[in-house]
Amino acid sequence: GDSVTQMEGPVTLSEEAFLTINCTYTATGYPSLFWYVQYPGEGLQLLLKATKADDKGSNKGFEATYRKETTSFHLEKGSVQVSDSAVYFCALNSPTGNQFYFGTGTSLTVIP
Amino acid sequence: NAGVTQTPKFQVLKTGQSMTLQCAQDMNHNSMYWYRQDPGMGLRLIYYSASEGTTDKGEVPNGYNVSRLNKREFSLRLESAAPSQTSVYFCASGQGAVWGNTIYFGEGSWLTVV
Image (cartoon, rainbow over the protein chains, first blue to last red):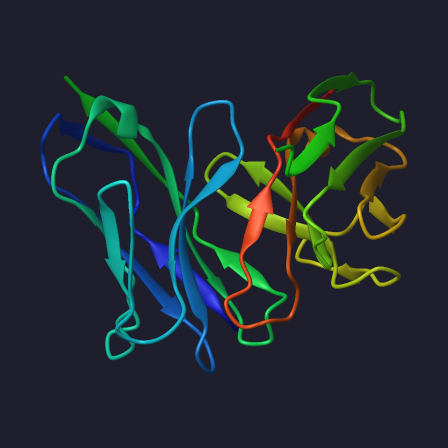
C-alpha cells in the first residue's frame, strides 16, 4: 500500500545552518506530496506541496522537489532560524484524493 | 477565519466513561477526517468521511464511532474510554477526491483517560 518514510529525529541545528529532512514514498500512480509543520501545542499547518513530478513546492524559505525517479520529496532550507523549531511531517495523497498517508514526523530544534 | 474548530481542547476521562469530540469546518469542504497522534507513531487515521452521509474506517477505528452530522460537522465518540485512548486527536477537512486535495487541521484535542 501507499506509505511515507521520513528521516528519524530529533535534529538539532545551529541558527543559519542548512537543513535537509529526507522523505521517500511508496505509491501507485501519481500522488500529491506535502510537507506539514507542527509547532508546539498546535495542529498541523500546510507548509508546501507539489502535485506532479519535477514540481517544486516552496514557502517561508523551505523548498521540496517532487522526484519521481527516486520517489523522494526532501525538505530543504538554506538558513534555519530559531522560529523554525517544530515537528515536520511528510505526507502523500493518493490519486483518488481521499486518503492521506503521513510519515512519523521529524523534530527540529534550532539553537541560537 | 476559523477554518477547522475542535472542542474540547482538553479533557480528562475515567476509564469506562464516554465522550464526544466535536469538529466543525467553515470551508465548505466535502471530506473530513479524525486522526490520533501518539509519540513516535505519527498520525494515524481513525475514521474519515468522504462526503456528507458517508463514513469509512481508517487504520485504527476500534473503540470509536463517528457521525457526519451535516457537511460542516464530524464528531468522534468514545463509548467506553480506555487508557490506550489517551492521545491527541486532530480533526481535518479537505476538498475531497480531487487532484491535489489538501487537508487542513484543527488545533487538536488533548484527551487523558485515567
